[in-house]
Image (tube, rainbow, N blue to C red; front, side, top):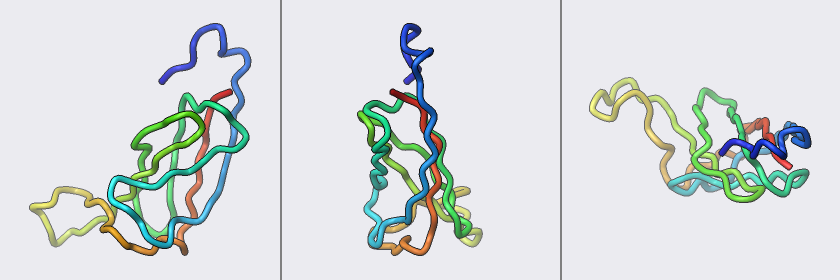
Length: 100
């Protein structure tokens, strides 16, 4: 969601770094940006060779979906969502967020 024109002059840019969840749930996990009340845009990455994407934004919470690559599973496509219960607590999630 792009910021409304009248709010663009007041946007804050925030960088956060958190550990991944101890038990990943299908569809992603929430990262709360405490410095903002509403997030308009976010970019995320994760360590450990995983791929992360912003699945959705609601208020100051960004849902992060995580994928891994399984090159032997050609039927699955280029990346597969991490299974339920995967421990990502050893991975660092970094996010840039823009909002108010």
